[in-house]
Image (cartoon, rainbow, N blue to C red):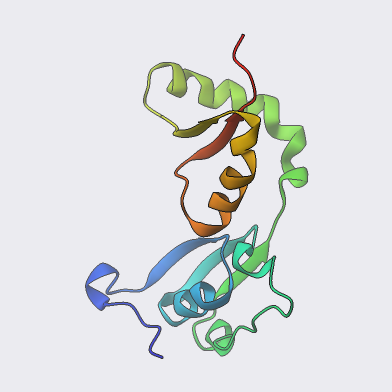
Length: 133
């Protein structure tokens, strides 16, 4: 299986990639990274429900292309949250930054919404409205 993407999308390679999928996607990205590219890893969603997680075959690209790959988690930045809100809220108020919510109504639809998160059905933040007041 050829995991390289068409060069027309990034002929110089990918400089920065936010990894949240893992598995085959990470393998494909590694093949297409630019020299000295950077990968920030905060999740591997494709691997969480597997009995045996998939291995990553293209790790040699880290060496060949001198790629920097580093994991991080939200708790590392909790102390910066108030500063972030101060910075980002004016952009949200001015509609320069927008977000998408995928809303389903009723607790009975919660399980299907959860499954949708893992199958790519939802777009944006998934919300289950239990009751409207």
